[in-house]
Length: 118
Image 1 (cartoon, rainbow, N blue to C red):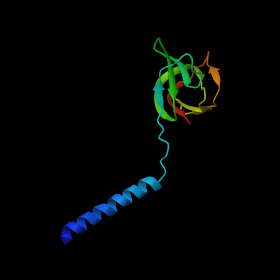
Image 2: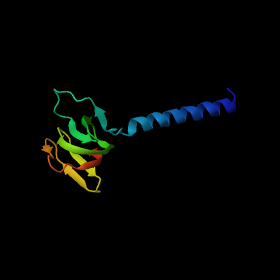
Image 3: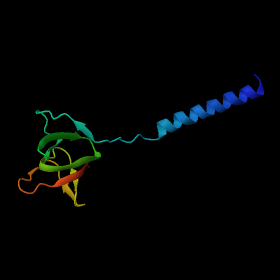
């Protein structure tokens, strides 16, 4: 084998072995991204939010950890399911709502900008 070819093959072998060792040695973390999911009537473990804006009503369900925009909707009810929630309102406040909580806001609903499942 030519010396140059041998050197290239050796370098590729070492690089491949290092990549394989790194892949095995480094634990993979959990990738989380909040998901907007269909509200299934049989499930009570999702985060479920009833809201309204400009004469429109909405019911939205979410799963998995992460933060997302809620679009400045007025929130009428929250059922957290198996999720710890923080919502961020238009006044800049953040409110934590623990899991398995069902709360309504009949008179003074918060205007929610973002939601985060912890």
